[in-house]
Amino acid sequence: MKVVIIGCGRLGAELASRLFQAGHEVSVIDKDSASFAKLPANFEGRLNEGEAINRDILHRSGIEKADTVAAVTDSDVLNAVVGHLARSFYNVPNVVVRNHDPRYRPIHEAFGLQAVSAMSWGAQRIEELLYDADVRAVFSAGNGEVEIYEVAVPEGWSGHTIGELMSTTTCIAVSVTRAGRAVLPSPNMVLETGDVLHISATLEGVDALRKRMVLPG
Image 1 (tube, rainbow, N blue to C red):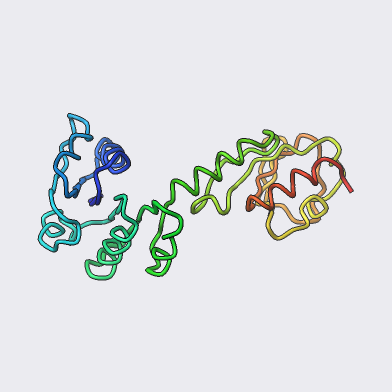
Image 2: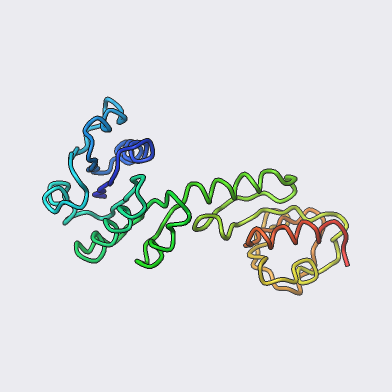
């Protein structure tokens, strides 16, 4: 895979290093050549010093043949502009941008860009970890707005249906594992002690589930 990374701060350097170690062809752009010192000594990707919105710099980076572009500078506006150029002008099939300040996230959404917000995701994850470990997050989608959780069915809910346990659209059962075998559940499926549920839920939905699990009925 041919990757162009815009921004060689701590995030960009770590991403470039990981992709290079995985065997991908990596090209990095940063306006400050000193930023390339953050890359590991064994990094052999292409380094391009200059402004990311400069057409010559983008050409030198190989963006015309890139499979993916990651715009991860500290500037949300720059990330949005470069991401839009990469997708709309250079027809890069996969573009991901960093959202540094959640207040600027609507800019990325206006361009229809896939945005990752470390601040929003981090706050969401820490909030989850502050709760009891009865419901464990195993997969996060987007910036944590929806996650997949693993739930061990409490003994008090044995004999009750999934529909009784989850009566909200913010929390949906996606699988039930019983005796090592996973099945797609229906709302009428009767739960047994030892069942493991995997649910898709918002933070509000999983909070409601935690409260619901305390007492059946």
